[in-house]
Image 1: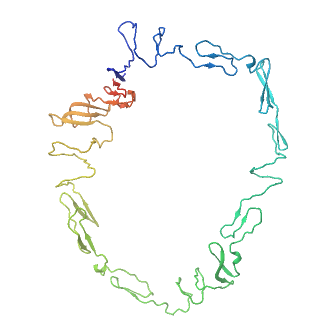
Image 2 (image 1 turned 45 degrees about the vertical axis):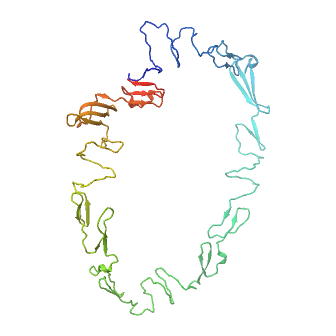
Length: 474
């Protein structure tokens, strides 16, 4: 079975599963130093053992507790453990009585034990208690207790009978529209509407936000008087006298209006408006004249075209009515004019006549060909291969030799998660079978090779512990 096996080098501590000699038996095995645990049979008088106390192995003291005869045992001599007899006995003779007492010394429970039958019998000394002036039997039930005084007790539920004490109801206070008052049940109080005492007869009251008050209107039952401005709404409203302000309705009930009705001054069309006349007698439509609006009538009639960042030329003012032409560049920029749209894009084949700098990622979906390149220099510290893969697979670097696309391969074998080597490899393959594997050296954080990641449990890999011990997996 493949495991991590320790390599014995000069100065290392050997770890051997078994030691087998060529002779039939080993008469003497000398160990200059040893530690750890040992199993198996031992023969001899142990005179050569060290670090063992002169008195032998010392056990912790084992001694008696309640009901056990006095003894002491440390392993050096034999001892006997037995129940205590005589005065230390819990129960002796033919019959004993056990009494449980309180701190005052009065007996609470009397128990009799009969060793012949193994039974215990007894009784309570006190089987009743007194609450107030009522005697209660333990285990009994009562529905009333007389002579009981409660002090500092909060009780809930319903009660009957006489009550002696002070009632303390939660305070009842005034809210919005109510005059200030406080009521807790101790004294009487009066609740009234805020401002009610200041209201006058026939006055229409109003709400001020904190109380009711008299308004400037008086209502005698048929007429509302005392105002200089009033607004009436509803299906039927009558108003007499002179008034000003806005008017809503059809005016059918108005009097004192000229027979010709309300005459408006003429409203006619001006520059940029389709001719019309409006006097209020008939509806009209106001529209902007398409041919009547000139650039001079507009606040902004010019569009300014500028080159912008890294551009050239301009700015160029383009008046409304003129044509703005956007030119493309051969093999670089295409311009397509459609219905109310201009599309600016790249042609299918793009030619860059000068240097091209890509400040972000460059993705090549086809074949990337580099011409006239002797040595490839990559500034990135890490190179990602098979970036388009979404499953595990093989991959590596092929160094071409005498035949095109064939050479020596250094690659990762995904089947065994190890790097390997092979020769005469064709670069158009998607997998490979290694001739040999690269050995990995695991520098452990401790001394146990089994703590190394499981992926390195493969033949030929090396583990070096913090104590400089060396293991090989085989």
